[in-house]
Image (cartoon, rainbow, N blue to C red; front, top):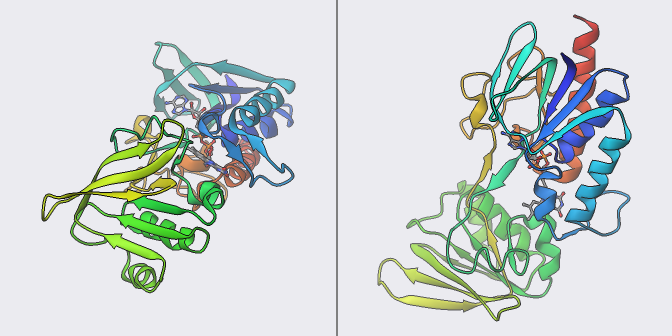
Length: 303
Ligand code: FAD
């Protein structure tokens, strides 16, 4: 059995594997796709000590570091289920079962898509999902935020301080965010809010985004807004379906963790975007992964 088995090869899983392996304990890492979400990222400019890099380059460096220490790396593998016990059984979709004394789940999350024409075509070419990451790229430009829940309204407030103008598009007939956020948003001079508005297309010139088309659901009329960027903020879905009924999840499906990255099941730890940790960022995921590995090590020496 592994002493520590890490599921997930993004920043959280990679950091966890490096920290565990450096304790000289038997460490494995399995992941569907090494690098995780960083593989879908263009520029990264907010990781300490790294002035500027590209996602795939960052992912390759993560992998190289994991492979430089004593970790049994198993790429292209998906976990189907986890069975707690004295040793934890990790069942893979290919039918195999791996056993471990402790488990670190770092399976990340995925942004919910609006699924309109142009969204996939212009991903990283004006279509963005993370205001903390990509907001500064639109300095002085006009952008839209799709989604009027807390994350959408927070994003619009954040972006209004960076970009020239923000158009917020909400499908429902009112914003669903907390009243205090809505009030703040409404007080900003460079924000236009459209409720009851269904985005039907993100348009571009073949190279990058140049606008968005929405239907006014009350009148049925179609409108076009000229823009340089569209931030899609309609939800971040944690990759935790395989844990339902095994560890405690929040109502959003995030793995509930304490400040040591422990879950509701002894021996199972979790880190990064898959968990309740606030702010889903690379530096945070990496820090959480390190913490989860140290907690797993602490658990092992006490058992
Ligand atoms: P992830 O990176 O999501 O990795 C999850 C890992 O788990 C992957 O290896 C995946 O294949 C694996 N996995 C999932 N399910 C299973 C399963 N069932 N079985 C096996 N393996 C599984 N953050 C920043 O700090 N700066 C940025 O500039 C930035 N830009 C971004 C741009 C984009 C387009 C996106 C999508 C995100 C961006 N982020 C950025 C956010 C950042 O990428 C995430 O916060 C970070 O990658 C989370 O790390 P993680 O290890 O928790 O999860």
